Image 1 (cartoon, rainbow, N blue to C red):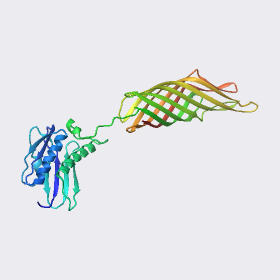
Image 2: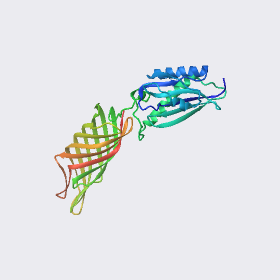
Image 3: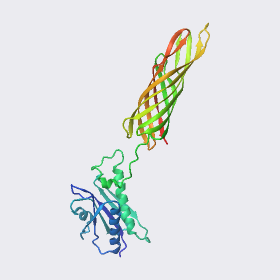
Length: 334
């Protein structure tokens, strides 16, 4: 047996019509025990993967690519594989011409001078390389030239469905609370807890506050306003995927604390007010992992009754008729 490398060529058949479950394996031209064993193991590996394996005769021309392109069992096979000896190198060359991705790739595995090439490893290597080629074609941003047949798709890892908002979830964000009735924008942290109750549906608890920055003023002075709100509601994902639009509705409680800074001769006072709150929101969840997403959300908030800030006997601002809470931040499912 001459010391030489092994060339493992994997070429998809060029026939226009493909049999999704049929794979052809070329018989070795040379009388070689190791090659014969490798081909037998290759057929077994493909059969165990669920393919119909057929035998095809090679020729002694020495042109592996030409031999494989001439393979013509009917119906045309999805793929044609061959194992042949390569002169001048102690290595394994794996060729893949993938009609799904439209790409040709070659992988070389160097063998140590004292090591033996194991026939069973060649068969496993062939299937692994085909799987890697298909996986590369399925990456985001890649456009396969052909749809992956159902049988061949079994070689790919099962897609992991987006988990958000499945399971128990935690969301953290930064938001801006703004009233259209006199109270300016206020920056607030936002914390959300969720619990998936069905596919694309979750219960959610939202806490926002303390929101600082809003103020109300009149001739009598100015009042610094701090706001908090908490609500419980339902979130529904409209379309699952990498980018998920969603809607939510909730009810809860709203609190405002105002601290007055009076102009002389007035005296500054502080006060608190509470109200019920109704909220409805829409947003987008961008999947950034199997169990995490980045949420951008705009929420409309209405209080019952309305909450007003009185500065020196004059209503200088109202909250929640309506107010808008815009937020951005990550969310995780566990």
